[in-house]
Image 1: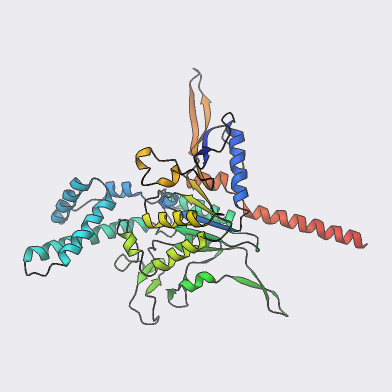
Image 2 (image 1 turned 180 degrees about the vertical axis):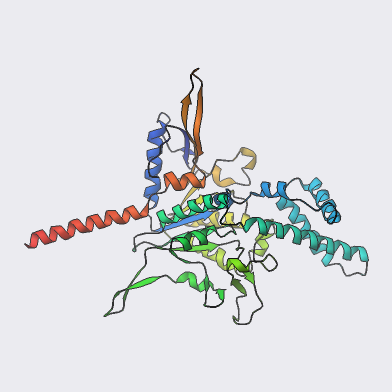
Length: 424
């Protein structure tokens, strides 16, 4: 879609802590200003996106949803269920906090040098419990792409890439950073025949090599001389928390990096290189390949004339947040556009970016709807959508970069005809 078909809306956009719109402006004029501003950002040289779990939430449960759906076998997993419930009673119904306690307990009991059978039993219990939950999370992420819910989410990813992948060859290729472990990005890109670099290279076996992020796809322009230009339909994909198809391998073909990319048919949670959602994920993200991926994230945000669009991310990862804050503290030409509702004051300390009065920080949120009046005069809302959700952003807010190329072709055609006319 290109035109917003909703007649009513509550659109909120801030620049720093100030309202971006005039207080008396109507929804239609606000929406037009918003689209103009986003289009303006797309003229910057360096465009970056940060995807969080919200972009795939239509097919993959959130952490709250995962907690609610986690079940234990009442007969075979009595000890695991009892210990899990004991931890939940202390830390609350939070899967991240629960896993954190389990990791700490496993480390504690694993470090005790003793012949006490009880210590060994506790260590084994936490090993089983952690493996059970990690496998559950892995299987929840590894969704069937043929399911109806997955197809719907995949269509939005495909539309997203159809709109943004084609870009002027004189500008940097668009870069997607994501904390998601699923395969929606890769599936969408493959189905559209869009080239992408994700840090893996090789033939029979694909290993991680961060040097590949310095490469690009190019095409030869002249067969008689070595003249090349970048291909237009290419993006960079950085999965900063790993992927369900990344596998820690002991294979000796690669002498340093031990992360291999597998086909979807080979997936298994046993040696998966995921960063599971716990506070200790920051510690794991300091190892290979995450240190390289986070370095790329940091370096790209320090490039001049950059914009970072943040979609579906809740600012719950301290390491990711620190990189964004560091970029804002050192790069005066970066803009950060957050699609998300401003949190409440109690969350101010955890999510300070929403409360900082800096003109480089934009937040966008709200809802749109139509109205229907029944015979008795009662008005109800219909076709309600959330402005800061991935589906609406893709449908209504993102400019179609392919249209830019058509405009360029039109201008080139005019100049060509003008020159031909002059030479007659």
